[in-house]
Image 1 (spheres, one colour):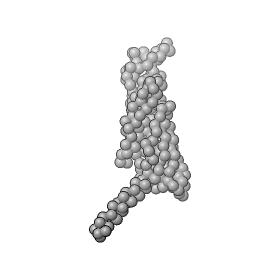
Image 2 (cartoon, one colour):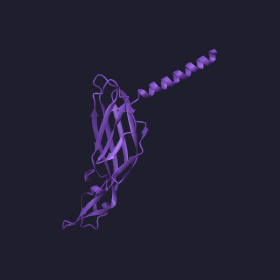
Image 3 (spheres, helix red, strand yellow):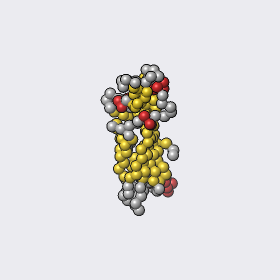
Image 4 (cartoon, one colour):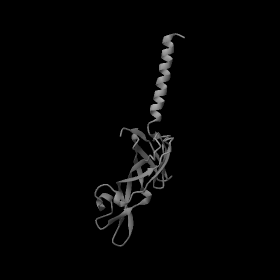
Length: 185
């Protein structure tokens, strides 16, 4: 084998090995995390965390949903509002200690939004209540339409890892699909 061919072969092997090692050392989900309803649940295996010496990883989920408010009149009758409101809910948990192999199973639940999670002023007009004699008393729990998800993982041994993207909720089937991509932290 010619010397130049041998050098090219060793360079190719080196680049493949270096790329594999660089990716293996970076914190990431082993495969796309599973996202399900019943609140908003994120589940998956986070790898490349860097175990040993009691390392911990903190995972934070931030979900954005469109919701319908429940309106109530002075007689106690309730009806759903006509305008969607935006709600943001955050949940965080710490997992570990991470084993030496650097893989930790993550299961994080982001609770369904409440009226306190609605962004901005909540009044009868914004909620689409029939008139000013009605008041907003809560959220119609069957109307929670998750539209965006952000997952952030932090560990003292790794750079912050962020996945985010739009979600589509099928309220009739009770399913959700999120198109998550890695973004710079």
